[in-house]
Length: 102
Image (cartoon, rainbow, N blue to C red; front, side, top):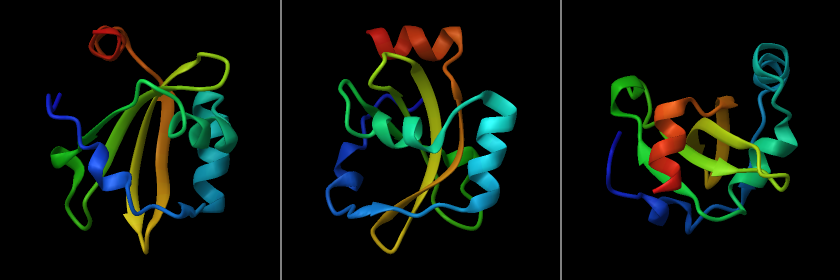
């Protein structure tokens, strides 16, 4: 996991861009709603890191964060035209929770 927090990339974000297929995929695969994904970006602490392993066609990032009801999520996203586009979201695994809670 990238140890350097990349929060600065979020400074110019003006909103979210949703792909209908990803909205349904995240719900069907992991029980995560698009609203929960958005909440993560507004709650602290928030850890943002580059996802170099999966950044072939475009830069990808992931966040470790929590929803308004303290659900801990791992969210993969990219940035398109100053908007966050969520690619996938799921509950954090044990390793991610330990890193988040540090």
